Length: 124
Image 1 (tube, one colour):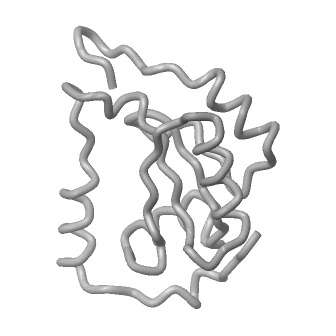
Image 2 (tube, rainbow, N blue to C red):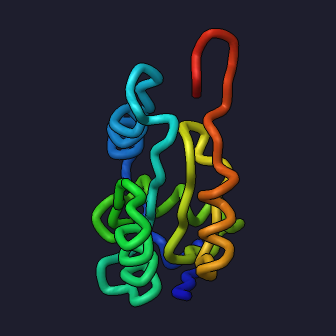
């Protein structure tokens, strides 16, 4: 597990955050509701382990390198009350449930229980 304090995370201008917000919007008409997101760093051993497990289990996922995406870095830090922990794994359009530095059993349980959230006629 890699942790950073909130004051060690550099701040970017508002334009970077607004651009990242727009690019991370989910599309309810595709397979996005079932998407698994892995936030981590390429140099992190635990992130590599989680990515290998997902590949072995045949789970499709989307990897976001938080070293290259400042908005994602701030988002993961906010999930852990200002401390950046890698990897963070989320499931579904609402990115909930989410796990921070999960053990293998926790990851398997989350994926087994993860179901799309139904809101009216749309699946989120």
